[in-house]
Length: 300
Length: 313
Image (cartoon, rainbow over the protein chains, first blue to last red):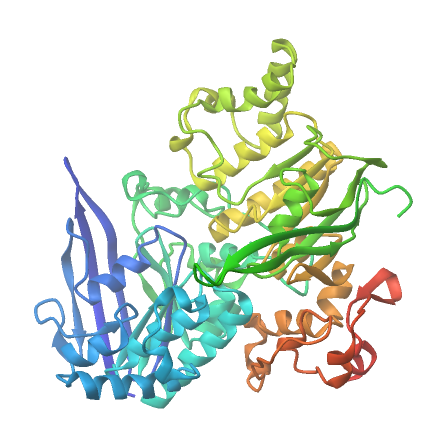
């Protein structure tokens, strides 16, 4: 598979009244054509800001302070490429980006709506959003996002507001469409089991940087970073009723990030070096990257 | 259960909504809670599992008498109740809107006790005990809600719910607004407090694994009715009702196994609330007008006419 997207040492900063804050630091990953990739993290970990920067949609006071983003071997930071995200009405995209006439665009929209499983799609064209259920609205969003047959689909928490039964059908739909169009997917989510069962590889973000990166089967079954390990063990499981291990404390905001490894105040394995220096993302076996000083903890 | 702490008998809450245009008004009845009878024992947690709009929040508020039922009875410790009782408390989903932003934490904790006429010495004694037991330090008392994270606020909200020494607490999606790493802290705290203060919970959530973790028994709700009720392990590991099965197979853990799961939508008939989406429904279901619970081992109750045949599939 050839590389579609390459992010190298991406850093994003934000200007506030009196200082400059590092929001995202040293984010690197590769996305192949047709690959389903996930970024997981808690709120404030920088996952949404990372993908907004890929689309050139950063909020006003945010900027890319260093690093590079290559999409199809073009530098994304300087040349804005119309990547599509969930967020435009279906035919608007076709008219603006596809240079289609309104009538053709509407015909195409009918087909798209059918593709995402909306019945009576011709009548639905004249419906307003409030007349549709949450699951249907998300299907319409997906139809608009795939209308230009994008090479990359970015889905930022696409099912967080939906019920589990609807979530299951939306995720099946996203997966099916990506396979049909050979599109790559970046799925942003805080739901570990959703990611594990949808994507092939995953980046675990904490406090603005990637802590662990690799194939889902490796990261979820043999996690190495203490944060990943604890994140997995603090989820209630269907097949066990053991007491949950909880992570003490709360994730730091960008203002209160600690010196050294950003996870050190909550990490049971933290040592002196963790409190002083920031570890780098090391490749510990092919395709499996971990940002942690205590790599000997690997075998426990 | 010999002496349930909470019992509801055929509890109903109907809302009438008008639709149609100005000249052609139609009255429609929405059955938010439709004939629910449950029992919750002392120190027991009953989990209410359901998707949005199934009536689970309405049920919690009916039991607390925050809203009045259309019909049905609620018993607390064997006595019929029809007004708000300080021994029955609630924890809401959103810890950001549960605390008054203009009050310090200390004021927020004092308020329910002042309303209920508890003297200052007793109030301070209770607060200092509670602060220790919920894992926060006394320093927080002089601060304001905006100085805390979601998880810390939820701890404070829990402490406030416990100031009046309740024996029953409705926890309405108490961890859904929290981050994954914080959820476990709060769930464990709720479990510890249940032992420490001998509490009974009605734990409302849409998240099956969370409900299973904390509950002794689970009741699955759909369209205002309970469709299945039983021990947590039985309901999660040996579900009988097609809706419970659908919920479990919708969990991402089971995605690979449910690829051929068909989505069904048909016109509602008969008295089974799940008829319009049920993959097993047939003429027998459409004709059934008085659907009632069937009993299985271990007090496992299921509202489905086809339970036996569904079960063997």
